[in-house]
Image 1 (tube, rainbow, N blue to C red):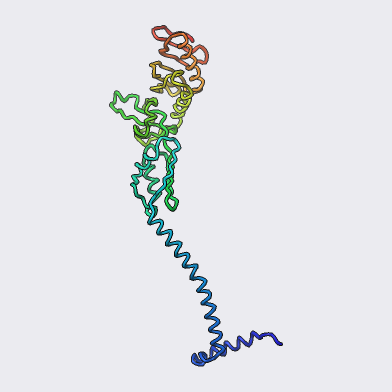
Image 2 (cartoon, helix red, strand yellow):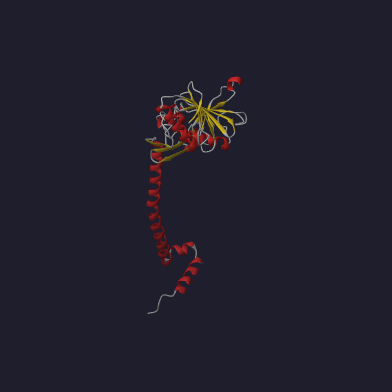
Length: 297
């Protein structure tokens, strides 16, 4: 038996093309071939129908869920533990009913970052009903004010973070930082004393190191610093909570704080009160006790 000749089929198809529509309709071979082709397309269409149906159902379900569900879960994270979840939501002005479909996370992020207390923020939504909020706050280390404010009448006072950024004081948000010392600025330390201004890092660095070094001690060991002055570029003058005055330089701050702690400890042991001390000399720092002449420690 001879194999099927494909050239014969090709010749038949060419012949059919020259036949009239009426003749082709009654040509049994053409009818069978058309039926086979139609059956093939019907099978293909039947395969696509459930796929499209499933896709449509899935999209419809997601849209229905998105437009029908409100935010049910809010996960909040704060790097500085200054702002809590309720305070962040007040800044965002989010009501009791927030729809996931109409939520604009980029707008919410910008709204958080308009707060002076917040350095940066991340807001993202996760279907079906979860909102994630993360804030990185500015940590106040000192107040800043003009040294000659009493003379000029400019009593502006702002917070400063470790990077030298100035920002407004919020007594509710910053209630744990209201006791930080005040650094009195000289002309030239900053162009304008306003929120958003930034002080030169070279001027800020000694202040940051001073705060870090003082935080290593308890208030009983070294009374809290209340005021900081920079009479010279290389020098700092401190006023402690007990009224004692401390002179130090901007280098080796940690070692100078260690000397101060030892001097104050010795004063307590001998039942004396330090009025002023110069901790710059590593040997024999000058100490002035209450109602006493200067004494070498």
